[in-house]
Length: 440
Ligand code: CAA
Image (cartoon, rainbow, N blue to C red; front, side, top):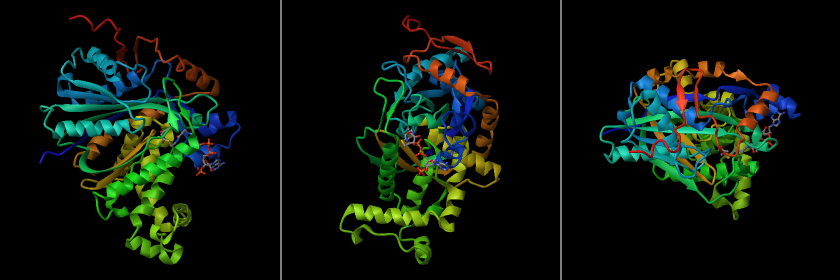
């Protein structure tokens, strides 16, 4: 049977960075440890003045295509996931394809292009679409290019300002992949929510604290739904669990929730019973609120145990190393988490082929998806080709005044005036003029 999955990945980080504990916190009269320990962030990646979702997405895709030796003819589908789009009609995929066509002097005329929107989960949804397209046999031997690109900027002075970021992830979805194989094991949690919105506005309207509760509620539903297709889930089944990472502190809460769920009725719960008791069962309570309070108390105890902390250090912590350095990339964030985990495994010389990942994606509005992936032979070479450390080291370190200037440049009524430029890596990027493609 044909296997389908992610064959290659590339990451493009915004060209500048903001030191959160060192530069941002003092200006906001806050403790640096709120960033280092609470939110779990060291730096945010910011777009330079000449960068936007198109240039970052095109650059990530170009790196990926060059590395894999691909031409536009090899690509049958381009899906761009973003929540930073500036055009309500023409999809960002066409702008990015236009840039790549200039660079390769070749066209994507026969590729199906689209833009996917469901907040941060749309990167994963685009992968799901590509998987279904290939499994249905509609790809005619060609691959799908999925690009997740965002400038995750918040209004200055809002609570979200602490968790900004900018960057793009490009992924090639193919038959017989070299990185991870996708499966049909999926679970969803979904509800109509209004805690985080951008109705025709550049910066989000966000109720930060409520957005965290909604994330956890949908993630719990997704875990429960996942259990209906993958019986007897056990924490040791998974080498890593990459979650959507708006900031690492959020994943600390999601990891605990997932672990509590997975240890139910296992030898781990039995082993911890003397230390912290068994976890409460819903049937033991007359009302839901009392049950929730009891679960919260159990989780407060659970997170202090050596058993949990050691599992978290092995399974979740390695997914956060890049996020700590770049902040939130919205649609790209969970894919950055996967790359972080695999990068750590390669650095530690771990043998991962055949091991499973459990991937927890989330988008405000709101939906969570849990799915399983299997790491395949070839993953190490693929991940060692990422030059993410080099990119992160080369970012320009902004002082606070420069940060405010950059932020202002990107707050421009949702129109971008830069039409043509050469990036620092020598890639010429040009936004096609609206009239340019109308001629036959
Ligand atoms: N030392 C150690 N820890 C400290 C500290 C110190 N000196 N000061 C604060 N902290 C801890 C706090 O205790 C808190 O941790 P806990 O939640 O575990 O208690 C953490 O640091 C953050 O502190 P605050 O809650 O005081 O921070 P805040 O008021 O600035 O709000 C936020 C944080 C709500 C996440 C805000 O940054 C925000 O609105 N962010 C944007 C929304 C967001 O990211 N939501 C996430 C879920 S929605 C989603 O995932 C979609 C998406 O991508 C946006």
